[in-house]
Length: 79
Image (cartoon, rainbow, N blue to C red):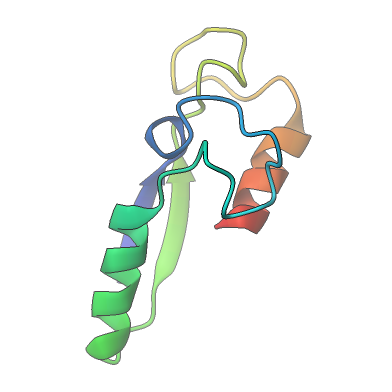
């Protein structure tokens, strides 16, 4: 199952510890539920990250790359 993860919705504000999935800035509830459901059905999950948050790209649109690639890398580690 392919799951689209909207970074800008999952992390609407900058996390203090970006690679920590338990940082309070993150909201992974929907993603966790979808992955759990897929696993219960013996499905593998492919996560695709889309939508840069405004705090990461200088206040621009979600389709603009982050100013620091490290922000995206840390988010990918968290998920």
